Image (cartoon, rainbow, N blue to C red; front, top):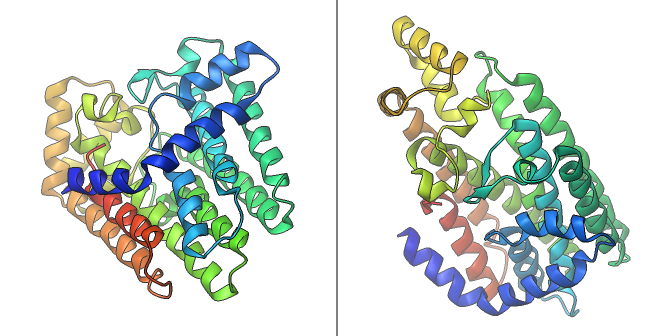
Length: 327
């Protein structure tokens, strides 16, 4: 099913993707070639452009009459890239999208400052909307994502992270950016408060589902599918929902074994496969998938107040793709 959904989405958005790529290139515009090299290493490494597509089609679904949705959509790709550059430095990640992480090729301070530049570009483009509501959303996003990263860093290595704490972290780190892209599409179209709230809610639930699906893939996909080594979250000291739920259900012996894995995460393939089997047996995988499906259902419910259109179909397909994708 995932391939069919991906094919359907691409068929509907191929012209938009080409324009987004062009807009990203044109709006990157750093003064230093080094900054462009580092930013381009991540920006043009095969990202899905999910966040720009969400703004574009949220705006169009709301009957946006302007001609700048493509340019304004780059705000969210620049923001996303900035957070990835920063996160990879903080986490010490070695791979991103199947390529060496930027900080493994350039000094970490240069990578961090390039992330800062991308954040500044996003804010500059947001200012060009001349809409204080858009600027306020972007400010709230950057604040929430920073707090989410700090919170996650504070939880690093802990074995007692609760589901509630996990949900708070992913709401700030992931959902808020996807939510903001959808909300800004509504703001640009100047729709009613009810429709803006519907798109805001759609984006929140979609973001939660996407992050849960990512967390599942870290324990179910291959290195080739992920573009990085499976189990990266555990190696970085992050407990995600499949593990959190399984730990809560585990017998003392299994819990002790799993906690040992978390404490010493650089393990061989056989031990990692044993962990994967425990996550299945203890229902951590199925529970996480069910929670993600619930968020997708809630997201799609929010689209019911909008008239049928190509853009509504795109948003619906993206919601379904969130939980059926393999990468």
